[in-house]
Image (tube, rainbow, N blue to C red; front, side, top):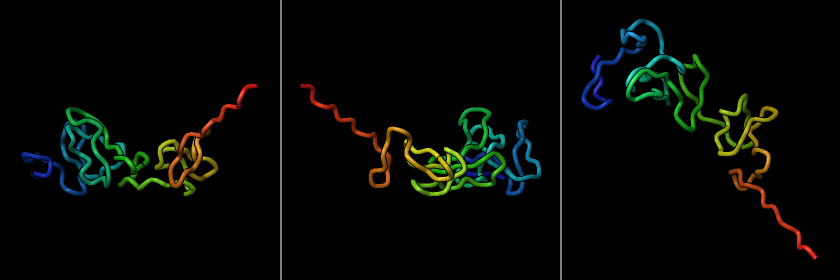
Length: 126
């Protein structure tokens, strides 16, 4: 089908079909990690884009969304203190997944709802 959402009208596969590496539409759903070419092929994977605007790539989640290969859509990441399974799920810069929760990396503290570098005070020398 012709899709003008990408500018001057380009052919894309209909819903329920997926582009393969020969740019032929075949039945099956697109997902995170699916093949895409020249920004086409990820139209039906929510919150994703093609990793390449100019050649062959794969469908990847756009920040602040995440997803695993095979997921039909990308999910909004987790904030500090929220449940997680991996580091890529943690939304805040300098946050990691530790013991199933998003926390600040070592050397950073929670300040409001962000991770900020710890201040190190130097002691006065006598």
